[in-house]
Each structure stands twice: as structure tokens, then as C-alpha cells.
Image (cartoon, rainbow, N blue to C red):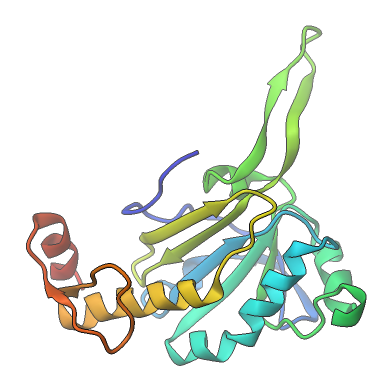
Length: 210
């Protein structure tokens, strides 16, 4: 599993469902470069149990992300048709109706692979046939990407462990504070708390570019 922090977020172009109702081709994060921060999160599978709680939780806080100029994008290895059908299903029936941020279809599993969150791998058996080892779905990976397309934060959970949307917002606030004020954020920092002056070269180099 790769660590992408400090590196350019891997490029992708894939089918997706936007606004909960429209299937589009060739969706890419490139459209946000220079304009928006991005929270890209992976989840294992449509029509499951923990996954809808996360997708609804991000939707419930979507206005908070939008206030900060952040685009939220979800991704799994299901097809765009599966995403669309799940988006039409009411929450009371286990669906994600009401989710309006983009849901990407990683049907080739290349996006999850490039982001280092694919649970499984391809190999060849003794007959030379290509086989899959593992379920070939995404772990619960989350990536906070700055306006230049660089990954600034990532977290990866195993399948049964749901994430904290509030912690994601906290990390967005911390990143934006660093960019806006040239200070670094200590442990458990929250918006409005005192921060600290940058004292090492890696931070100084980053700040000089923002």
C-alpha cells in the first residue's frame, strides 16, 4: 500500500454519477486544479451496510465542505449503473437517495490500485491464467488533495471500520489554516485554536508555493 502524501494525486478519467441522477463519462479531478480542494474517498461496495452510513454522513456535512470550497467525491469498484440504482433507493431501504456529490465508477479497479487502496491483487495460476487474489474491492481510503493536486492527508481503514466525517472537516480546516496563515497546526488543533510558526524546511517549502 503506497503513501501518496506529498505527491500528485494519481490522474484518472472514469464514468460517474453526478447530482444523484446523471451518468457522465470521463469524469476527472483535473477540473478542480487551481480552484478547489478535494476530498476523495473510497468505499468497498454498493448495497452494503456500513457504506451507506458513510455516504449519508458526508452528504449531511456537504454544506460545510462547500462553505470551505471543497469538492467531495466518492469512488468504488462498482459500475456506474450500480451507483445510479443505489442512488435511486430510499435511505430507509438501505439506499443512498439524496446524495448529490459525485460517485465514481472504478470498474477497471485501476483507480483503487493507483491510490493504493485495492483489497486484492492480480496474479497468474500454474496454467498461466490471470486470477484475482482477494475480493478486489476498495478499502475505506480517504485523500485530501490541495488546489495544486497534491495529496496532503490520507487515511485507510479496513472494511468494517467507518470513518469520521468531522475529522475530515478538521483536516480541511487545518490545511486551509496552514495555507492562509503560514502556520502549522499542533495535535488536536481545531478551527479557532492557536497555531504555531513553521520551523522546518518541508513546511517552509510548501508554504512558499501557496
